[in-house]
Amino acid sequence: MKDIAQALGVSVVTVSKVMRDHSDIGAETRQRVLSKAKELNYRPNLTARSLVTGESHQVGIIVPTLVHPFFAEVLEALSTTMKQSGYAIFISSSMEDPAIEDAAIEQFLAHRMDGLIIASCSTSPAKFQQLKQNEIPFVLIDRFFPAFKTNFVGVDDLAVGRMATEHLIAMGCKRIAHIRGLEFTTGVRRFEGYKLALKQHGLKFDPDLVSPYMTADGRDWERSFDAMRNLLARRPNGVFCYNDPMAVAAIDVALQAGMRIPQDIAFVGCDNLHYDGSLKAPLSSIDHHSSLIGVRAAKMLLQLMQGTASKAVRHIALQPSLVVRESSLRRNRTQ
Figure 1 (cartoon, rainbow, N blue to C red):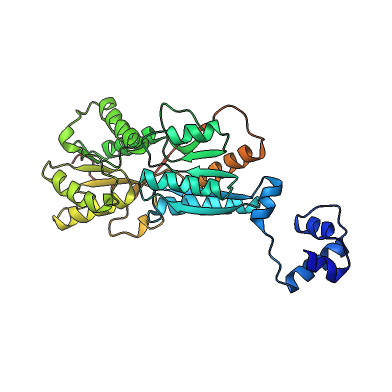
Figure 2: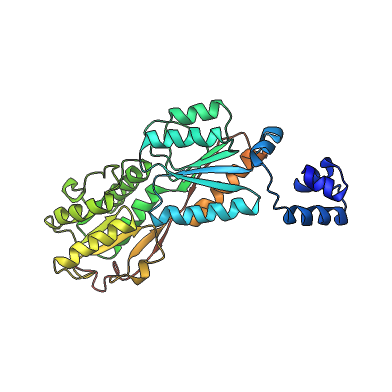
């Protein structure tokens, strides 16, 4: 800034105000400073600025995986919304490991992030209780801790399980299996929704038609092949899968076994990923509005960081919607 000021014959304060977009600098002076800054390849020292202002205009985001398309869609919406408000985002994957998640949180805080958005893989809210006590703005997405009240944006997972199962029942399925996900609120509540729909429609819950919860080792998609092979021995005619990648794997197993989809066995997943309509058996899926989760979470965090949010904790559970495709659309519903 000293070089720019000296070259233009203005004060360092004037240059600083231009770089911080103050409104009390005239248009001509502003343009001269910006042109000279570009000529000299000036880049502001954001770390130094944050020490002075107490704001970095940077947000840290931690998700369990960068591979799953659901989180990619959430991240895209988060990034777009934050960018529109002048914030840069930094992304980290916990790889479903609580220790890595804790380390990422500490690293983000050490870099003076203004706030955090986290899809936690932890089974304990202890870290988030600490963040709350230290008044660090943060929002949980996708997964939450039932006994810990904090700001959250996700989908009503109980409604996800109920909606998927009720659709299969409406299609004439009587023996409906469920391939479960990880044992977080997402997996637990979708399973509860599945059981609730069976009960409300007078169908007996059969534990043999339910796969065990997946383990957090990054192999849930691979394990869903084995889960479906085991379930086929129980002769289900409908399957609700925790997410779309698991449904794709389960459908492959059914096709390899010579089964017709959906005539012999119908499938419903959850995610409504962009490629669902292009599969060999276009996949019916529950849309939990991943992009909207990203937008709502970003706006919630912006309000927290800017001090415009209500002091009351907000728990936003979006209502899912059913997208019906060929994998569940049984023409003969008496089967």
